[in-house]
Image 1 (spheres, rainbow, N blue to C red):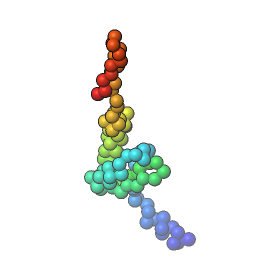
Image 2 (cartoon, rainbow, N blue to C red):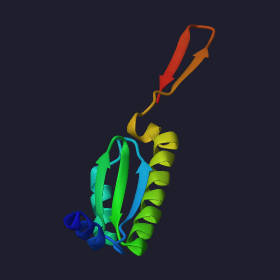
Image 3 (cartoon, one colour):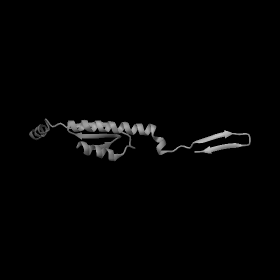
Image 4 (tube, rainbow, N blue to C red):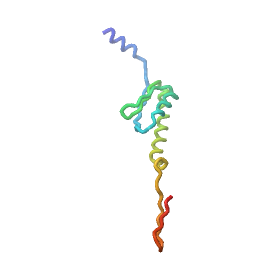
Amino acid sequence: MFLRSRALLTRVGVRNAVYRKAMPQEFNVSMYEEIATKTSTKWKFQMGAVSFNGTDGNVAKAGELIEVAANKFRAEEITGMHKNFPTLNIKVGVCQLGFEYKVQ
């Protein structure tokens, strides 16, 4: 009984802040490491979500940075796909003598 209460008493007053956010698996893992080193927190990616552990102030900074990175990733994924996968532009015209087309 005494050993059990002693283990609980050592944990009283010790707080560890945690920030958890669901992230896609296509997100670059090196960004997590970079954010964790900037904010001096620990990170892990588990079950589709990233977690940052550390002090309250550092975890708040990590949360802000991961929100900015996630918004940039989503914007690039939605509007920037044409940069990764170029499209084919074809102009078709019909003239009297035949069929004309121009590929750009």
